[in-house]
Image (cartoon, rainbow, N blue to C red; front, top):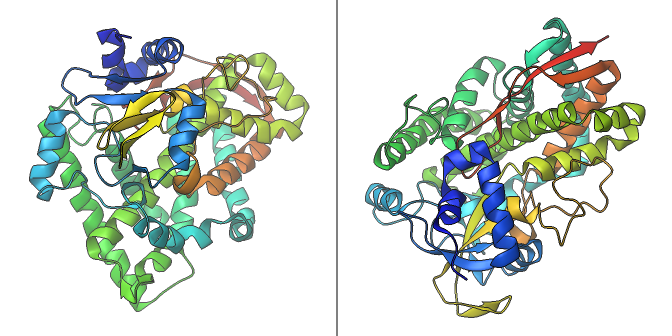
Length: 423
């Protein structure tokens, strides 16, 4: 079936994700009329949109058949792809991290940080994470009944936790916040490096310069941790070896960059989205206040609802068939996680925020070999934050119109003005 061009264009348009209704409309149409189909937005190479929950899982299960490293793992225009290859000498990737690797490299690199981020290891950090959560709950109280929850709380709380786990000083949080936001918001004039709308060539050049900033910062961290290792994630990465050798500088900086960005922005977006949803759904807020045992359900629903990572791309390594469609070797597929988490076949009333939703088998963390390495940390941070906030929060409502980031890969609330009463 022919996909309307405005729907094809919306799938890749950063502005459409800021407005979200445009993307939802396009994805809803695709799920119903053409759930697995090739589209060609203007300025982009054609690719398959994988919009159904079941099909996303099927692709994720087969990580040898659908690769990460062969082409870009995020949707990029033809112009952006040309610019990246000019910079890298032919590679489609400005960075080489876990999201841009396949086995055996992926498995070997994933093992490096996995131990630090397993639930049993994270339990040791619960008391300190709870202290940090209380700091930000107290900050909300000190703000006198109104704040921008995204900017004042949600962007900063997971950043503080991340800096602690990595072993980096609080004084460098503003720098890290700026770098992480620039990484995922290069298409948003409010958050990108240039502070204005930029061309694709300028955007890729900005991202390349950003990588230089990350390299400069983390090279000094690596040198310090190799001389004086500590009990932190920065030391684990700096001293990790594969085949008896330290990671190459390019891969090591990429690893630090992945931890810094993905470890902050996804949780920040989800926490902000959860507060926004409660403010818009007073019956859900009252339900949660009345039964704190529902906090894990609220966390899972906020993860589904916000779906901070909107997509990942995969490349077919051989001719195959998926849901009756013939996929050719080299074809590019977009796993539309936002669509999978709104799939009517997988969720009852998917456009309703429901903290009691069960089961809630969302795909917001991915699935299979590439499932999010930091999923346990993200859940733990949000669980503890709401455990600390809810007993003191008497009321919650929006105090203005929230806005979203103009970005089609990792995006979420940019501003969430709220009014509240606390004790």
